Length: 245
Image (cartoon, rainbow, N blue to C red):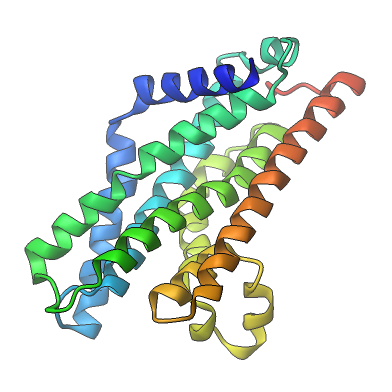
């Protein structure tokens, strides 16, 4: 029952906003601008490292915008309180929406690659398996972590900063895509808890351990999101917490 509800929520998300201009702008256009600026410093053709990094930035941008505006829309539509009283509770709907948003963000992978190839071509030994696995795991990792942002949006009352601060949030969270080896020494230890950093470290030539750890941390983040949503349900029921403020 819960799985069916979650899948239905994901399908509804794709049906309503699957190819929205906002998703295209944040997931494809903005990363391409970033890629253009980055290429002016590094030069050369497109390798797997650049392709995965730019696609990852697109996934991150798209999810920040979609999660923030999508869950704020749920509040304005007054759908959260009825969902809270349903047999499955709030979790299946929230997780289904998040799944749909994650699928939406996948458009960044082919979209950014087409731009990179059209502008600068592919490197002679482009590592296709590393690009494919890296972008797939990065998409899962970013969706899991962005579930924490969704919890924050649902938990606290609406504030104009939730939408006005999207640009700053995108810029600050872009640091999630830095590989551990590229971070300053003081930040390397905290970066071990970020699955995106582990995935990018593997893309840059790191061992398989980085990829496996990135997958494990993604699962931990997903479990944390489920736990927080369940905690939010209990708080809303016991303390009469309004989820639609």
